[in-house]
Image 1 (tube, helix red, strand yellow):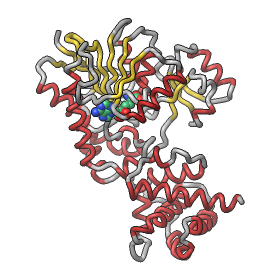
Image 2 (cartoon, protein in one colour):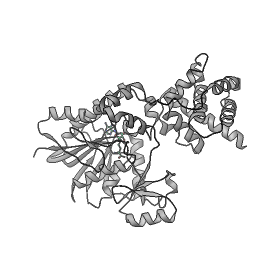
Image 3 (cartoon, helix red, strand yellow):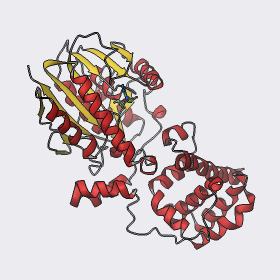
Image 4 (tube, protein in one colour):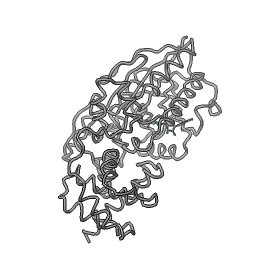
Length: 421
Ligand SMILES: C[S@@+](CC[C@H](N)C(=O)[O-])C[C@H]1O[C@@H](n2cnc3c(N)ncnc32)[C@H](O)[C@@H]1O
């Protein structure tokens, strides 16, 4: 029945949210098998506007709900999101959401949900930034006048970037395939980069199964292309945090003949990398399951270029991963910056004198970017930061920062550190 399907979309969104908000599960994990566009819209939207929706709902509850009724609280968020941010007729938003209490196995809550939703204003509070205070404070302290635009940009929907696999097809030929399939797109900075006007499931892209195209943020592609410019045929390269393989594959599509080691310490992510490599037709690299904070995996032969695409807060990817705003903590950012420093210090030993290390994150926070590089430079007399310049973003003290205020890209940081000969 279409009606009950709609109820269950709302109930499933509430359950997804309860897993993320209550247990700290990641959005990617929770929606892995979710296919309903409405449920996805509700789940993403409630995370994107979690803070203002929570405030609006809490203010209209006579008393807080019990911890075991977090699913009901999340259903109220789902109702509030429809009322305030979607073009769902008010009566449908309320009735369908009230009916969803049955799908949650809590029919007793129908009157409560109905009463709260009827008290909610149908417009959101105008000035809500929808960021956790700790993150908003850091963005404001670091970005000053730019902060309001950055906070707004973080609440937009992420664009869908494609990378044409130049080993398999000419960029012009792939563009012709998109036009034939009536898929509207814009060009980005690189011949192989495409921005879709409207995101769509990757499996529906022309030639996706044949590996002639991959989904990748166009800002991430600028990192891969910058790296390729540092290399020549025969270069020995380490991609130290390689999975799921976006930058690695881009490098392998550069046309250079490279000797590449792809390291990662997460076996399931390495498995994803291996499967994607098969689809894209990349065989000429060594995948290695190892800890980049140690050297047990290393044969002792130095590398001409080391890429550390470091694990980080993901604060540059909030449009794509709005759950980060809800689940990430300042302690985790501190932990990430300590790990980033450890990776830099350790992998520096594998860089051939006279050669280069590239350090990159998808964070916009200085404590994971320039500050990590700064501490490293202070402790290593043989290290020198060399300016980076990319087609979008701005120079920082030691590297380059892309920001999602340029709507085409996520927020990325890149620094180039050369080792004295
Ligand atoms: C930002 S992701 C890399 C993204 C990848 N370079 C790409 O372009 O698709 C960071 C990766 O670092 C890996 N990682 C985290 N700690 C690590 C460690 N100590 N040693 C090796 N890999 C690590 C994670 O498993 C994760 O896959």
